[in-house]
Length: 399
Image (cartoon, rainbow, N blue to C red):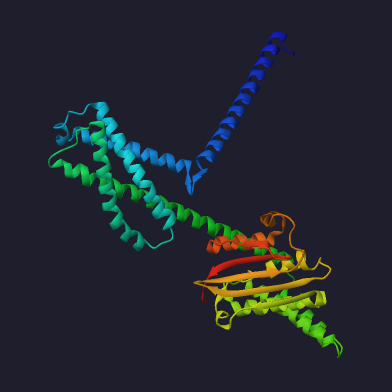
């Protein structure tokens, strides 16, 4: 039985109202979510060095809260009640000028400890604080006395003067820098966790790539040995190439399971790899690896240089009519190993920084590994007259 027309209209209006409410709710939710996301991005935007807007606002909030506590303490202290010549506005202006001076003095100290001396040991920070604490208090006391004279404030006198002139600034300094160090420790921990997460992701990606491209190693090596045994006399160079190919596969498989390898092993692998490429390119490729013998016993992460050489071969030397040369220089620079890879291939016509955006995953993988493992950059520049130069440093390490 059909419903009356008026009832159908009422139901239709109810449905329309329901859909409108859902649409408004969804739009409001999306708008609020979008607003919160944009707000969070704005708050986390760096405004100077490593300082974000959120951190600056927290610092200001700390000053406001501490200033309020200071004002209440000042107002209810017996010694302060003996100095009621200052009215509310005078006391408020006094506190504002007081904390403005503290902020001006704290900013360069923060820059000193958390930018210039960020990587220095805690003992250096501790010894330096023994000097900067009294310096902070004395400079603050002088400037606060001058501001009191300028604005006509009545300063606390008597026994309480030592409390307000020395102990409170000392307490402020200790609390402020305790919060600075706690925040810095939190950021360091979060960054370390993020680095470990990215390293695990890179390792997983490398393992997956290896699994996808890998034929069973025993089958591969047995096949290569069978091919080598079938080679007729007089073709010894082919037998050598097969042995070199087996060596490169064997090293790649072993290195994928290690965090560090001897530098001499990596160099031997690179020489074998380049020898195979030299057989393919003939006299269009020449290479040279320079490394002092005493450095060859040090350790480095495996497969750190081969992608750079492969990039030079594929994009620089192989497409060039006359080919080119590759030179790898390894030397000690202080407590670091300096690696410089130079090729004379076609080079790159545009901005070399764009290489990391346009090339495959090889360069980006090396760049990411260096940054995560050591906080070092993979630098690239143009070689004169042709080609590219890649360079990076890593700390000296023993196995």
